[in-house]
Length: 235
Image 1 (cartoon, rainbow, N blue to C red):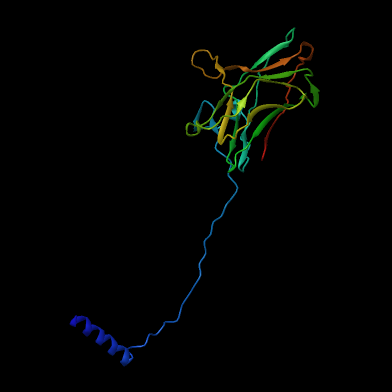
Image 2 (image 1 turned 90 degrees about the horizontal axis):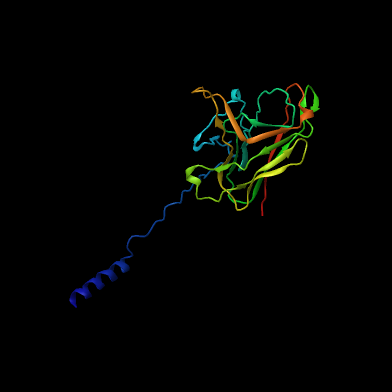
């Protein structure tokens, strides 16, 4: 009890004497920035259709196409050339198999909000020497294999089906994602090695065939462009 009284008395004395006054320092301020920059998605790597975990460099020397180089969140990265070799004129309607080892289509979806997308294919008119040729010809494309890198196997895969394209005809759906399929997807048609021994240079691919009517098999090299169009659907 005595101790408590002493402490109280000392505190009161300090108040009576006034004690030291409080002095506030002047404030000093500054500013800084927080910065972030976004840029368009670069063109995706082209993947190996036989093993999508690996990158792949198409070889124009083997008749393969060059990558599209498309950039952005939803891209058509690669579309295949189809080659059918050199043949003698036959005495009947003829079906020619592709000579390509592994033609493929690649689409990459890097959008934040996933939604439906569709790829269509359209076979334009064949030409040779500046003239329209091969009327009635048609290109048959089998269902193919849909694949993606291992890290993406849990995603919903796009769907495909066999199609037939008439030269100069309408575009046809060939690959569709109805639920949103993120990252890179490949649709491929793998051929069969028919090389003698271990040559490894001859391929037959019955997944891709060209039907040419008898009376249209005319001497010359005939070329038709195929238009591949990727369309998105934003809800």
